Image (cartoon, rainbow, N blue to C red; front, top):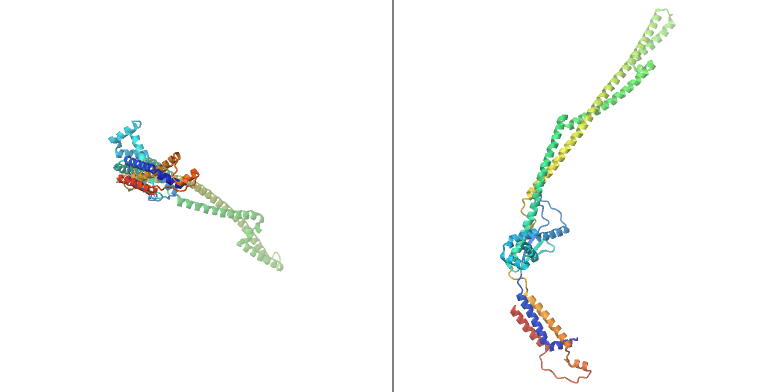
Length: 472
């Protein structure tokens, strides 16, 4: 429809538009006045996600995802049966005659009063975490401002009490577990210490460290002595084997100072004998004396050679005995060290058992102490930030807003009604429409003595708005 035709239609049917506008606005106003009043009270709590652990004082790293999960869990706990049951008990709804009457009127006894009150409380409670913060708002809607404030504060107190109970109950159950575990671990520690003491008593072990080191040093010294004795024995054994066959050419005989001296004297005596033999005959006393001297020196050298060979054999026997004695001492010391090593290993095992039992006992005792302290904590990382107070004005219905919406809908309804009626009952409302429909040339038109359409609509709208404002 052209704008000119629309304006002419509204001008012609302004009474219909005005009537629809007035009726719709009046209906919205009356409905707003008849609707029950609803009051909203808001309480706020602060969830300190980054709070330190109350017992150890340590800070745990937090991430955005963990914070979101914590806030979502917090909302679920607030709406849980445990919290709602506390609110019902705190508000004494099961003892309130008016509340019980509403329960009977609404459910006819199909569900229990507790289930009914739980549904009503959850329905009228809105838990809304604040964006990008740790503040959570609890908004409760009720027909009474006092009850709305009581319910909101009741949810906060019930939630805080539930948080404390959950933590303390968990800690108390842990206390019972760690108490029994600590006693068992203490018994294990005492048994391990008793086994260690009994083993030390049986083996006569007081301190294994220094004694084991000294015995090991002694074993190393004996090993070195055995090596030296073996080398000496091999040397004397080789010399003893060579001496009988080589006789005078044996190294020991050659190196003997006595033999060397006698051989020097023998050479000088032989030289003297040769000199005497050139000067005198064999029967001459000087010759006979020179021969006797040579023979005597040869006998001495032979006797000294035998003595050196016997000395080598004796030294070889001594070295054999010494090597055998040192080897026996080495084997005995070795067996002693091996026995001490076995005892030391067994002792280390028993000591490790004692240390392990001690560590387990200390950890259990520490956890017992921590849980004992945690079971006595009467606060959590969630605190009350703002209490709910009775609202001075109802949150619903909003009479002014509803009236304005009704006026807008009434205006749209009136315009639509006028356009629909115009489609069913068309009229010629201007010379242009007449010329278009009849196909004739319009020579002139008579003016109408009517107020302009804009003035009429302005007057009607002003009267309707004044009536609405007066009623509000």
